[in-house]
Image 1 (tube, rainbow, N blue to C red):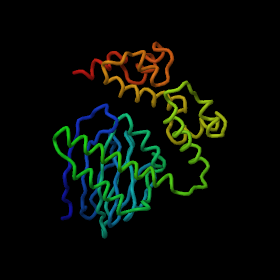
Image 2: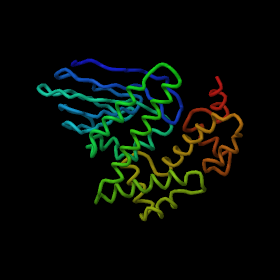
Image 3: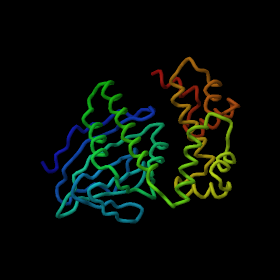
Image 4: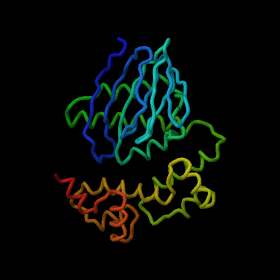
Length: 274
C-alpha cells in the first residue's frame, strides 16, 4: 500500500562497531519527499522500482530501479518520489565505530552519493533482512547488526569487482585497505603512501578530496575508534589498549583520544560501565 512503512525502529545510539538506527521499506506516494535536512547517521536507500530524485552537493540525481543512494552524517540533502512513477525503496540508517571505514570501502562518499547495483535481487534481499529482523530485544539488535554487516560486505564486494580506470579511486581504496590491516602497527602516512605508490602530497590531496581530512587525521581517527571498542573490556589497561591500536606512548594516545572524543580514555571506559 502506498505510503505504508514496515518495521521502522529507532535504536539507542551506541559506540558499537555498527548499530542500526532505523530500517524499513516503503512504497511512496507521488511526490513524497524528505528534507532538505541533515541526519546524525548514515542512511542508505535501495530503489527496487519507480524513480525519484536526490538533491545534495548542489546537484540533482535522478535514481531508478537498481540504484542506491546514501546520506552521510551532517550532510544537507533531500529526496522526492517521482510525480508519475514514485519509487519503492528499502532503507537502513546506522552508525558506529566501523561505519565510516565500511562505507568508504563500498565506493560511496559525500561526493559520490549514488551507486548502481550489479546484483539487484541480492541487494534488495540483504537490505530487507535487516528490517525483517527488527525488534525490541538485545538479540534483535545483534541480528540486525549482523545483517547490516552482510549488506555492507555485499556492497564492498561489488565495488571491488567493478573494473575502474579511475586511478584516484584505486589509490584511496588501497590506502583504506592498508590502514585497515596495519593500524595496530607503528605505521604512518609515509608508509601508506609507499604502499599505494604515490607521494605524500598526492595522498594528502586524495584524502582531502574524498574525506575532507588529511590521511594522518584519518589514521588517528581510525585508531581511536578501534580503541573505543577495546575500552569496553575492563580487563585491558589504557597502556595495553594504546599499544593495540598503534600508539607506543600511552600519554600521547590519551591526548589524541581526548582531542577527538572530548574525554580521556579512562573517563570513556568508566562511562561504558554505567
